[in-house]
Image 1 (cartoon, rainbow, N blue to C red):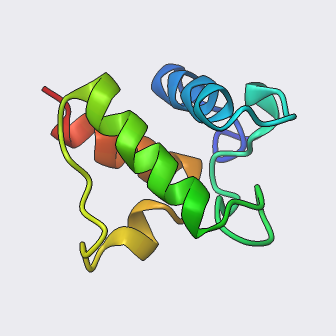
Image 2: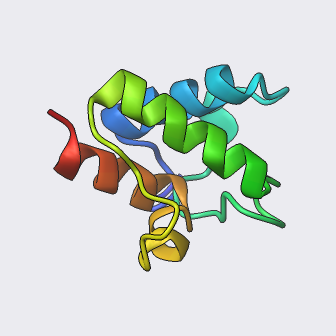
Length: 90
């Protein structure tokens, strides 16, 4: 498996976080870091994204805003979400 397909340690943490927060029927290690979270990839919808954003604020101590123009990029993949959380957590 290439490094683009292998989760980093923090991506593993975020994958577990997503699966737990949304009660998904998928193993965290099955979430491919660069696959889309929204729509065709993991299959998340806008309600799922809102739930993740709320859970992130509780778990990682910063607010994710629904009107952030970067949300499409932030939630584009596990890797981008993990990078965003890592750069903003307190």
